[in-house]
Length: 191
Image 1 (tube, rainbow, N blue to C red):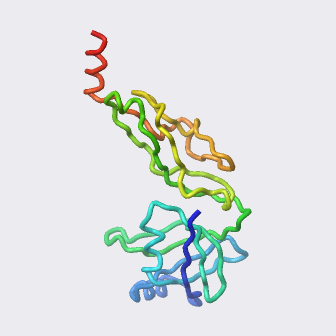
Image 2 (cartoon, rainbow, N blue to C red):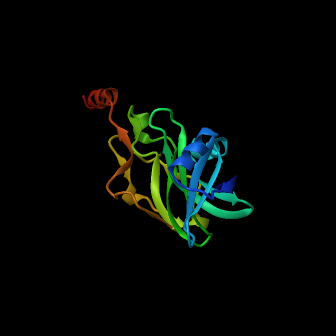
Image 3 (cartoon, rainbow, N blue to C red):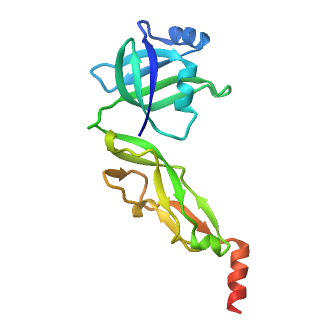
């Protein structure tokens, strides 16, 4: 799993007024959970851009006043209109700790159904998984070579060593849709 480091400063004063003051200075307040007590901190907004505006999942080394904490992003809040980052929550982790995260999906292969005129529909972009930090992949690769017209790969059929999928088992991840062209080709081929 990829990692990124963010240099932060511990917040001594917490509350709405202080958070608003930090935001006007281009700083983003955050909280690190998972220790004995939550640690409140702030960092420049630009530090979070490679972490927030990406489909990838990162292990984050939060350097808070010289002490480094390994963590993953738990939640982020944005301004409803301006798309500006307002707050970030992190969860402290360790190599042997179970975590729940969303991992991006990477589609691999060329489905039989596409060759017959079908269209690939990716219903999910990420999958919720539970696993040890050391076993979390950068992405979950799904091969679609064997999918024919009208067939799907559902969450329940996916298996990866050391990972538990948390999405509903019946949810289709990838489906090969039957297009009008494929229907007419199928009907024409029978006649």
